[in-house]
Amino acid sequence: MIDSALPQPTILLTGVNGQIGFELARSLRGLGRVVALDRAGLDLSDTNRIRRVVQDVRPSLIVNAAAYTAVDAAETDAASAMRVNADAPEVLSQEAKRLGALLVHYSTDYVFDGAKPGAYVEGDPPNPLNVYGVSKLAGDQAIAASGCAHLIFRTSWIYGARGTNFLQTMLRLGAERDELSVVNDQTGAPTWSRTVASGTAKVLSQLLCGERDDWIRSSGIYHLTAGGATSWAGFAEAIFRNSCQTARPVIKSITTSAYPTPAVRPLNSQLSNDKLAMTFGIKAPAWDEALRQCMRESRL
Image (cartoon, rainbow, N blue to C red; front, side):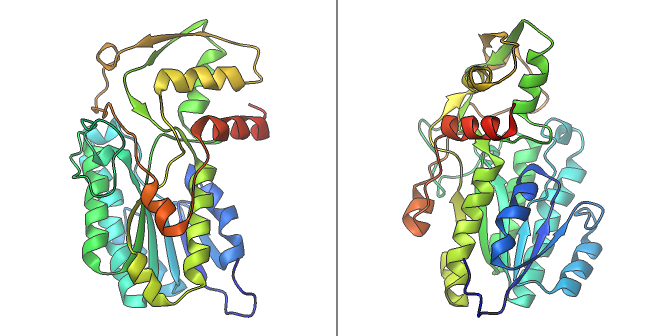
């Protein structure tokens, strides 16, 4: 927590109605005055609007939780994905640089091609397989090139008790069907949106207690996911194992080739959190532990 005797920083939060943004609105409360905007308040496809809002709010921290996340739709709507995921972060970073603000941004495992055995580290070369991944990588690179103080948190397989995500989809389909076919050859860490928000708040709490020079020294990319890894089929089995619903469909494991999608997904989405732990002393909970807590709290 921040010393109450110090002036409270103004935090501009975008995408407040999204999965991560919703959790951030709560996690960031104790760190400063949060100006939380949804798409109606700040549409990231409008770069002029972005500049006006940032200049009006004059935040010390900009936390960008908004993104174009329709992975398959991006294959035929690359322009929209690039506007929100690449152009908007570039403008936010330029404004952050001008104000001397710290920009927090969220990226994705999809910047990698999944060919590496084992978990990816931050320095591994990116090679996205789909338009969504290309657009997110372009945003990451624009932020780094701006010279602003920044934290880019790469995460993966986000789910939560609200919004559209794998957890909600499985529960809906499980109530309708006796058997569900789920991919078993893609591996990653299902990550509760609250895990990301909590980790972000812990990092910012440390930085806000230091000097602004610490913001520059700490700038860079960090992986922030739950611990451990599983497949989508393993994730589905864990969902129904922990669900309070009476429906318990059989999970039939299938290969990625048996479930073609417009966007190619990486087979390996595992991200190493070691840099985050070494730099800030933060260790995220195991994915199955976080899932149990999420479902228990939400009575799913």
